[in-house]
Image 1 (cartoon, rainbow, N blue to C red):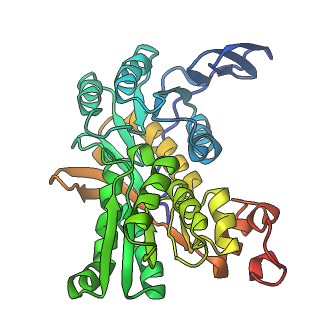
Image 2 (cartoon, rainbow, N blue to C red; image 1 turned 45 degrees about the vertical axis):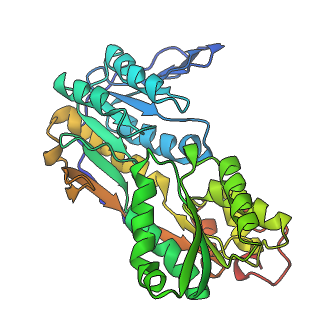
Length: 369
């Protein structure tokens, strides 16, 4: 469960006139006024608490649909101003984007890292300028940053437990995320906690394992096709670290008549993945309610406007990174979603019943009726 953070309000401004202008890709909202120019989004409220958000790739379904609305709402509820830009999967662009956000007056930065190592100099520079940084969802190993995410090692354990229960022996494929994203290794660590002994004993053989650039579903599909070919389709289970890649894996399995036969994991509770769970082609997804994470991050950002010391943000604890860096953090709890509890995401308004249950045979899944 998310731990609520105390909020220190940052004041408020009068609403502007109700005018909308669109030029390019940037949205600016001041009260009831919206202006779009370029690639930066600004929602103006308080003048003394500007929160700059750097998205690594805003085109991914999750960020725009779930994280940003909750993050922005929490910032505005605290009287702050929301400013954002999009690195479009470029580590170099993201570094300059941080400078751009500071130049726009950002008092706090929220950074969803494209490359947690490459962004470290820019983060250190921001902190040196007195601008606190929140490492959002993805690790940036700086002891002075605040790390907010879900417990990604536990996400890995959840995925592995579900697959291991179904397939305690046999040939496994592991499809990991981007090698530059620490989450890929956290998830793999969780897998190891569950299946490591079985691998050591020989009950499980890992016949294919790879990182996937940018967590790209097409790359995951290519890798899965190669692993199937190399092993004459003799694969009994796939641990895929997220839903997008699971979609690519399942496409490769489907081409060999193995979709729904070989269990596949995922995470993020994307709509397509939830439908695959209902259809039985994906065994589970791990639901990380991004609305909780966005709210916690927004509240933390407002708190940091009042007190820039991340150690004083309520609800946090020390997390030791893989490189031994102690960071102030808040790790939220994830939840597995399988056919037998699909109603949890439907009841929470995460997905409609029609979307979750599209194509599902009547009576085959309880949540679908």
